[in-house]
Image: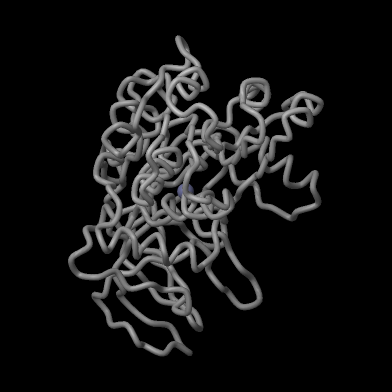
Length: 340
Ligand SMILES: [Zn+2]
């Protein structure tokens, strides 16, 4: 099979052996796979990430060489391994949380050298974790299940009461997913902040009630004018050093801050300011299998606007160019799909 193999900061389209499904596994043909911010992060910082993980005592491979990324996929069942039930049929389209059960191991799909991700024509999935994609759901929508699930989880962790004003800082795929989900829940005040004009436009199409360019205006100023005195939830979806400290300084009393942006290095903030204002900082990561299924259900029912999130589509030979475009702030993409 053809795969886009990441090696030392570059991609090479190579022929790899098509994987063979083991017990409980199925072979799936990739139909679409989104490029995730965490893929870009691995691409840029693989060595540093591996060192940090090893420092925390985790046994991890050298992910900078010969890794096949891709964990935001939809595929089509091709073949079943042994010990499978076969409730779904070849040709059925499926999604799955990006983990493969392999004997005693749970392998992260798209972040392990023991199994390939979906930047390839085929990949292995665990039958027990498959979710069927209905016929009328486009591949592109199904491929957004994973980033939408991150948004579902962030909103659940925010324990919304229903009358909050929201500020979403950073309008990459996760920020945009949160905006679309808030809109679907009927939120009235959604202030989106991003330096990119194009991303602000997408945020507005997905349901932001106001958009702000943080290089010239603070979203908290906009908030004060629009929803004075309302409870506030801030979603930090940018992961930029110093951002959290800025939110702590500017947020009104009792603000809940949901941190979804991954800031890779050390960061500082003023606990005394946060204490005085009784702020609540909730860090969020991943989703539960139920939240993943809920994300696919929302997309399947058309409960969520998703099309503006897709800003590009490429084949395997376009992966290098897509990464260059995603890392170039001037191009301001949201989600690029790979269709191998
Ligand atoms: Zn992802």
